[in-house]
Image (cartoon, rainbow, N blue to C red):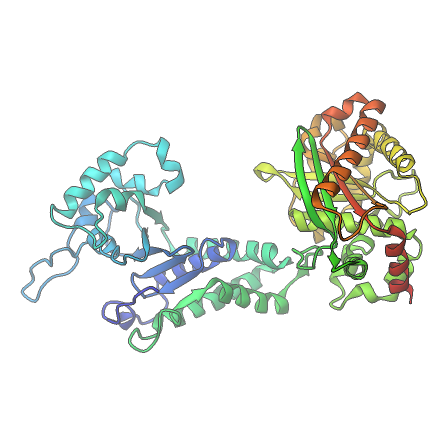
Length: 532
């Protein structure tokens, strides 16, 4: 646990109101909402501000305003800032010494930050470079030499560190005005409300939230060190998220339809294998002793089904479990339960395994120009913050069906979807999605039919999901047996697709396979659950 000096002098005892330092601490609190590498913002504990991180790491932040007139350089950094009663400079009272002096707890890894309202000049400007980008930059060695000289021959932190450690662990940030800090706080709060809570706040609400957060920070900075603990004087990430949530629930302008889900999985991963452009994934559900968990599968289908068959406007307009509503029941009744089941399971997999937003198939219900080949569409975050479009075809195979005949039909359907329909289907998807209920994305470019579909292949992925009855499957069936069974089915599907069109080897494909002891039992139980 961080040990706090109980001396109030020069810190909280001298504060009379909102200062630049409070706004900077508020900035860190807003950054903490977006970055789980910060677990707490401490106010007047060790340094002006202390940022607590996992794994016993703390960043000591000195905030300096009005200290220098023309900018910060080595001379200002090493200048004595305190004097004795007879007006002699106090030894080791410079900004530099006070910073490294905080590297004193053997149980903590100390890092440092300088935040100033004046620019950094000369060799010190090296410290403005983010730590992770410094390896390719020059200036470190000369700065270390200068800092060592400024520290003096005998000064060393209690953990035995000198200039090289301080330089390698110090970041310098400059904000020339409070207004710039406030603008960044508001930007972060706006982003946090969307990313964490899936809601949009008005500009006025964001401003009010920033003031509330700043007041919370100010209140903690005013707490007396002798009376209160480190925890009392620290705003934790959980506390900041709760504050954001409480405010947003009352002031949200427009909630997002597809937040991160915490529902249990319908199916659980068995294996995940990548081969070139193909991803092979096997899924299972378990047994309670010797009884297959049919009821769990059906219960979770009911919980998940609303995302597949309701419009985003309907999802955001209902605070209760809409999966129990009559409107949804009547809509589901128009579909074969095999379609309901397969689409819902695939949606649950993609939503749980990836940063994904679905475009529900109900959004395409008005399309009467053609019979759509796809069964699901998801916007998925890819590499380099590019979004991808994952398009799925599904089959939930009844016990009486010939699985290989179904696979052949599915592969033909996929062939038509990819090589005949998709060049134009992109326009249907572009018109069908409702962006005001979605997080920001950049898929419109790849949906623009001005360009060929094949020019964007790297950002499309086609997923095949099948579920079928495996007659020999019981509680004794081993993982290796299931894995081999699923891989054999995937190989059959891929070989069939390649035989229909060799260009499939250029397409990004995902094969998701879910065997069960009895698919008819799932369908029967689901029918009873929904329509009873």
